[in-house]
Image (tube, rainbow, N blue to C red):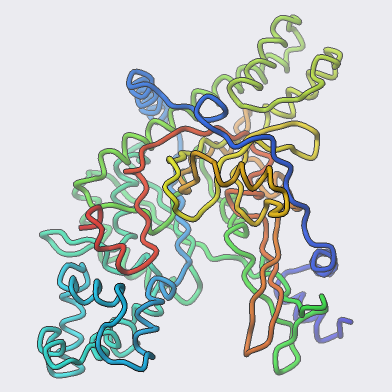
Amino acid sequence: MLTQQDLKQIAARGISQEQIATQLQQFKTGFPFLRLQAAAAVGRGIMAPTPQERMDMVRKWEAYKAQGKRVVKFVPASGAASRMFKNMFAFLTADYDAPTTDFEKQFFDNIGKFAFYNALDAQCIKNEGRNIKQLLADGQYKAVVANMLEAKGLNYGQLPKGLLLFHNYPEGPRTPMEEHLVEGALYAASNGEAHVHFTVSHEHIALFEKKVDEKVGQFAAKYGIKYDISFSEQKPSTDTLAANPDGTPFRNDDGTLLFRPGGHGALIENLGEIEADVIFIKNIDNVVPDRLKAETVEWKQVIAGVLVTLQEKAFGYLRLLDTGKYSHEQLVEIVQFVQRDLCCRKADIKELEDAELVIYLRQKLNRPMRVCGVVKNVGEPGGGPFLTYNTDGTVSLQILESSQIDTQNAEYMKMFAEGTHFNPVDLVCAVRDYKGQPFNLPSFVDPATGFISQKSKGGRDLQALELPGLWNGAMSNWNTVFVEVPLGTFNPVKTVNDLLRPQHQ
């Protein structure tokens, strides 16, 4: 099935023949659905800290940073903004010239409120000889949109979200990338330094570096810190083979194999190469202006405080187990910590002898840990927090996407539909073991949690293989804890008109 030319193409990407064989098999067999026990809720896997507990956790986080720990803010920023402008692309090719849909009317009625208005106005004057107001008065709506989306103007249809102008300030508008630099200073800086890492696509890395060079000095001066800004790209070795509907390799018109990015789950490799004690993860488009940042900053400190408190306890128990000098009562105490605080349960745990129990507890304690902020479900698309069965028979907390749930199982669909919370991608991760060594993160991925989606290329149908998602199956074998955070900490920008929401004005 694979030619010598194919094997060269595969090797050039750093992918093994075994990986290709596995991927082709996965197209044939598909992936198993997850077994669910229940949707997580407050009191059942989700913590809802009191005001006093929140203050304690913030103090705990500040004390942790004061120990000289290395903290990194990790921002997946690869996505192009094309989906954000889907409605406006549709308007450009529509058979009408004036705004007709509610979305189009909202966009043009409020065009002056966008942070990119002045930059767009300048492009319109340069390319059309008239400003936005004059063009709209003449009914030239499409000229304005073309100057926003196309390469002759702002090129927003092709740029990554991280480099679009999102928020207005007296000193000038800011991009999401800049807002993340500010956040890094406010809750992730330690030793007078803020480490911020962006994952970006290859074609945009120079643009990101240029923007950082322009802006980083003013934020360093404003917050009295040094910045260490780094970038990485999704590795070609994490791309996956595309397949025809019959499961055979999909080929381009020139006969070569088609590889596609494996989704955000590929970033577990990038995350694993970050040198840090604690890593914050947050999506590029979930930012707010400075006037609303206080709530976000407080809750980031809260979930980080929860993380380091739990980690400290886990490390203490691991050191105790290392001594070999522990009582049965101390083992029971550790079991209670794993079950109650880390929400990892084993039905037959009472049947284990002490020696077996120690092996089990060591395995559950000595692994990466994450605390995930979850918000009350208000109908936004995204994964939810669940208690699920693992391959070893334990039940633990996981973030699930709808694609991982058997839609034919009425009980599971009811759980998913009635889930009280969902995942806004608000994570803080502990990635070193109790001896200070970095965990090998890819070894904690559950490979059975990928999924297959239906796509097309050049009018031909294909199957695409998505790797286990970064915060789903890629972190399946981590210790996971959920904390309820306010909805005000979650303000994603999925369409251009989301920038008109009060939180972004």
